[in-house]
Length: 112
Length: 109
Image 1 (cartoon, rainbow over the protein chains, first blue to last red):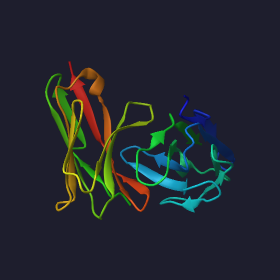
Image 2: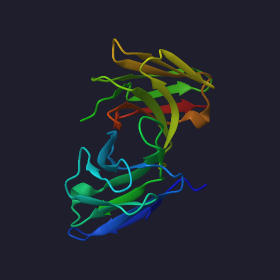
Image 3: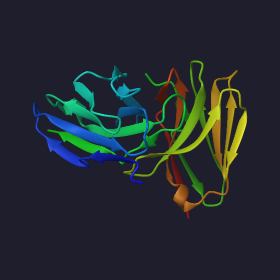
Image 4: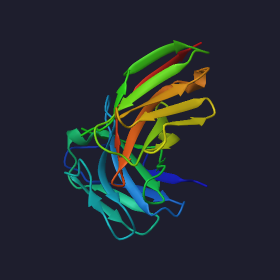
């Protein structure tokens, strides 16, 4: 099984450009999450989707939008990238409710 | 805001020694989880301990939870070079996980 797959793995953007990070899971999980990880900090939740058809803001949603396309896919969009959005982005999923999270390998984004 | 705080921030030990990391948190939880992250990789789940459990073992890992002190510890026994990684605790409440900043563990050969 592939688990959680994120694309792209690396991306360099100029300030003001837009892009979408894609995430797909093949474990039939209900809940999906987008986090960002910055040096010296833990993961911070951007948005999550507790189930297909729902999305909610996390701790740091400003500058981002999400789409839960179907049960498998959860995308994260940066409409107008800023240098402060330079980070490593992780998608994760779990079956629903309390329990183990499964992570993708990360997408490393640099905004110049 | 970060709920979990790990201590120490960094730990360097000799191969074969035991490594202990601590995590403190602020609010009530359903469970507390520990994850490992190798450099440049995603996080991997290690162990979950529920709020009504006090201790849990998995292979060379031992986790304790003290809800009265709002703290947890992760013990890795007989460390190996492959244990070199960052370790994160995450508290699970209201169906969201909140993460600490992690402990960077280096195992010296």
